[in-house]
Length: 593
Image (tube, rainbow, N blue to C red; front, side):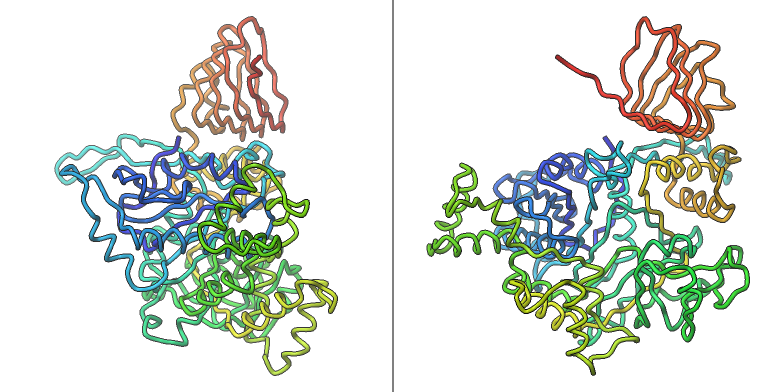
């Protein structure tokens, strides 16, 4: 289990929803949320939380482990509406019944939390876990959002007068979801009440360099009606070879890290989806690419050194400020209710001529589903598969919004192109929903908050994960040659810098023993023991051993270079040697009768 890495300060979000690919996964990660995403040491009365997947942290933040309702696949946009609707429902229930806490003197009302819950809808953070990690099979059980990452929990030091010398470190096992919540909680201090922030938790983000501790500048937005209508994405600089596989923001002005003020929000000139490198280089006035001088942290456009050419990459973090979030909330009640749990239940009841209202109707729907009975030959789960609308947050919602390169002067032609791209014609049953979506979201303007000190890593494949866990943890020592093969020096430097920013290390609670130091020091081991003391035993450079044990007395263990081993256990008695070839991903599980 990972332990808490959240900061002690009050979280800026009232509700944090963490989604999973399916219902089973959402139940399985509850303990991970409790152990790594917040402080849940205070006790509350069970009847306070009516949602079995909702948990209340000690600072009053509500955590919800969720998934798309009834097994429907509704995309990141539909999933955002579903998660937000669930967050609002749980929050409103707690407003009606303020939580009780055990503070050592008995059960009392949490007055601070009661005061926090007044003043409109909640501020919600939604962390989408992504897909089922098919390109990184060792993480397929819960997804890459819960990948184990060994990090520094705290440094041990001893003081002698005015001098302080480090004597060691205490490591912990964290994960991308915990690190993302912690990072966003720091920079979203002061976010207006009622905002909805959406993020992808299968990526790694870092926003600060060692010398900066800025936040997003919300100071001029709170009393501005137009400002509260803004939708903005978070952007960080990334090499063009990385940017070509993601969304890219084109800005009128690239900010400099030399500025002392907090990060501002500016109108977006253009949004590109997975643009080729040549396309990014060809865009001028304003330019898409700029030159990143790593030493001075200054940014200039139209630079000559192509290796250091950067673009503003979309981190996947999108913020709907309160008035823009109102559009999401209204859509969940009427036009896009097919993306919410309650909406699907209502539609199913209406379809089958259940006219009862309120609790009685819901009990009937629940009864049908729990007993797998059907009406008109279709269960609620089957109905949800066809009734929902699959909406992508980025290509459907954000693409409909206004930027500096779009205009509402040609609304009809823009709507026609929008519908054509989604294969919507006059005969489509969901044409009215797509028309409404474009009509409402095209009224919103898309802004960008560019963070020059930020960095972004996507752990898409097993090789990318293994490289990050070995190269990213080597910021204080020489990087092994095998791990650097086929990598550019700038990519290695960024990976090491990012690893340093989150405190990534190569060891967690390990006891490696009988392996040559010259090779084992360049591998990463999490909760392993290993121990084999045979003279031929070796761990190849750049290899990762996730949850080992082995022991293997009098046996030779040879692990090749750049391997990723997961789930290894047992003693392997009677086995004279174990050889794992280089470049192999191996998942081992014990079979029980």
